[in-house]
Length: 203
Image (cartoon, rainbow, N blue to C red; front, side, top):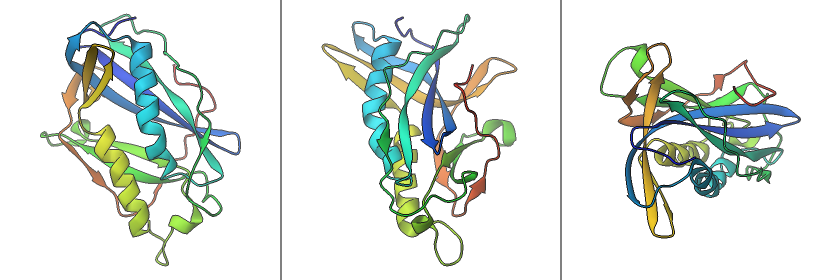
């Protein structure tokens, strides 16, 4: 299925540690294309190659970046999730994993105030070696977390043979089926607890 101008796209990134799955859901809007249309499958393949190494930098060596899917949220009907296949690449932070509910956190920002116009990404499965003496993320971990945020929270262009597509990050308002484009992000200097860990792909 091809991506069309104005499509709202959900990218679901999956990480796993000790058989426990953790998803990060990132929303985007297609804002530009050049050449022929790009398919959702092609977008997923290109994103997986770019995003996987960034996730590896914030994952414990006992965790894995499994892969990602893309799907259309809007216009209706919602599409199936397009899966380019698993990567199963291990994290690069040495040491034992912290509790599986402990996460690094990126705050998504827009130009509008209020909780409805902010978001948060709970980045899973850090290592004990990323935890400093005060019980906060180390400077190195925050740099790597910022690198992930810098990629995910800026317009992304995926190129193919004679074509390209650009998607811009957004906050999707499910109740009203509208979106607000994000304008930046913040790396939180402390750990966040996320108790919900899905074992299956989001619907």
